[in-house]
Length: 316
Image 1: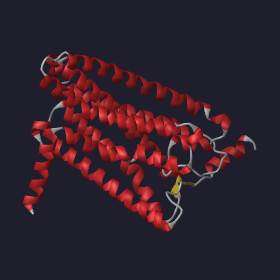
Image 2: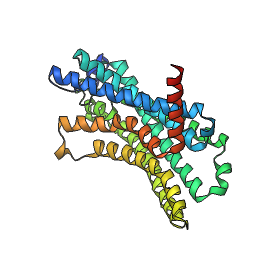
Image 3: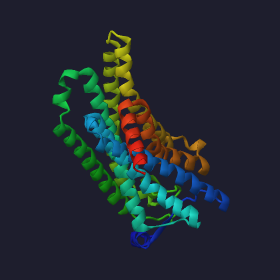
Image 4: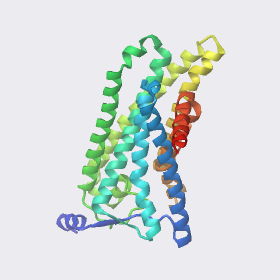
């Protein structure tokens, strides 16, 4: 097949076929109900965090400002992947339009990249708070926080735009069936002609290097944090300092462990059902759990959320 035919093949694709969540109608409806429950929990949890931080004037601090942004990325990522999967399960279909697939790739990559950047910034916030408390107001003033959040969103937008544009410009020679319940770059690359993947793999390598740099920064920061915490003389002071880091550590661990294992697991243990379970674990579970993790450990946030709920009930 010559290159002209390959290009015409790729341009003639009007839709992609997603991996079905189940084979039988009963299981499809069960998956629909499960996804509905998870997405409602994520919407409620993240919505409460966003409302609490926006309405609670005493929560207008750098930590809660970044948590507000994190909740926005969680809402965005779950609303990008889950509604289409629920629609396909309910109506027993596998299709997603070409434009819909491109939009899903861009938005998912945008929100995931923004989340990772924000988690890195939140690590810096914890580092300054514990290791350089006297400089906290200077290093993390309102303008500095706004600039850091803007940089996180802008870099995520650029990363998503470059990778999406590059991926969808590649010719496809291997049909239109994706081995995933939503559109993602590795699955679309599998459909590309073998000689055309090098450019996208180069761009992915740059993204991996940046992500690795953020990871090294987080590890270095936490080494410094633990050293500073261990130097605190009172046990109560150590506990208080460490407890402010626990939610962030838990969220980072959940985000990195699920994503890394889903994408870097050995091919020998790969199977369609395991791949599906892992993809749900890294794309759907963290956005639903993050608000719970932060709310359970943070008394101020918990109190503000409770105030919001009780105020709502009292109105009715």
